[in-house]
Amino acid sequence: MKIKSVEPFILHVPVTGSQIADSTHTITHWGVVGARIDTEDGLSGFGFTGTHAHLPGDQLITRCIATCHAPLLQGEDANDVQRLWLKLARNPALQWIGRAGITTLAQAAIDVALWDLKAKAAKVPLWKLLGGQVREKVRAYNTDIGWLSIADDKLVEGARRAVQEGFTGIKIKVGSTVERDLRRLEAVRKAIGPDVTLALDGNGKWDLATCLRFCRGAEPFDVYWFEEPLWYDDVRSHAQLARATRIPVALGEQLYTQDAFGEFFHQGAIHWVQPDVTRMGGLTEVLRVCETAHSHRLPVAPHAGDMSQVHVHLSYAHPAVGVLEYIPWIKDCFSDPAEVADGFFRLPQEPGAGTTPTGEALQRFSKPIA
Ligand SMILES: [Mg+2]
Image 1: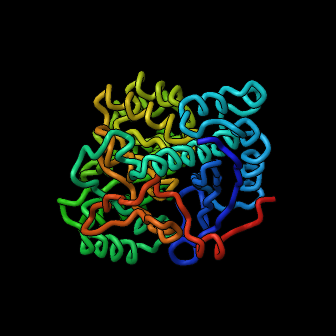
Image 2: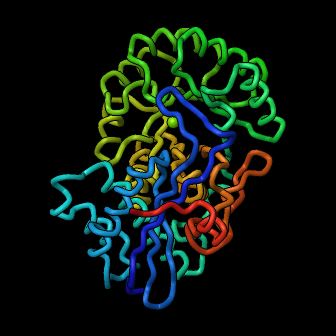
């Protein structure tokens, strides 16, 4: 399966409503910044990273794909996913300037495209290639009802609606003021009853003192996890928080390497492990993190920078995964959308990684790559 060409692409897809916000970001579109890899035997593989649709930033990623990574892939065997991952990640020319960041996001798109090709060549959905189905169903939790920009009454209404639709888990954003967020948490817990899992996400906004104060107030409401309570790389404060509260700590969406996760494992600073194939240089590195999490007996809840198009395959195939995030923004851009019915993800059926965009999506949402 010789690689013939690597072509980057950018899609900007609108979010639900016209705009959403968490404690640190306000966005109108989700960026699907990807690579199409064609082989000499006529197969096309697709992979992408997820961004906040900032075009100049997205164009840095596509430029990195086209000018830094693509030349190393020309003529290579697309089957050799592990070897090619190392070839890109340990490329001496890039290692000096980019062991994390744009180079890694660009590599994520390529690595996923290679897995997509591998599964297409084997004529199976990716979960089969990853070892086969280990669970009957993957439970979904809904994040799209819980943005910080949603007014209190609409938040409660959305949470109720999600439960009526069959979701057994939701997540709401925090990180405004402790008082406002506790009020919203209490109202949502009251509305959904005791049987629905309710996770919180601070997006790295607060310091330790604020988190401690918030957690004291939040503990009575049976919080499933508190995600990114603190600055993303601050292992010590997460460890202190994890020791001080009964609420489980979750994180990982902003970590680039297995070594970054390693520190959180070693210090007992993490209860829910949230790697993302769109950030960590692809599925290859995420699989390593899943194995480590499993060896620590810690559950994985992948962060959905891919809006779960790829993670749904991982979640059906890896024993460490406990639950998977659902945000519906981009699913209809793909020929095999990550869909939820009665609170569970549908088992993907098409050969590949779920990353093949439809012709219509390419036409409608494409942006210039430079
Ligand atoms: Mg998050």
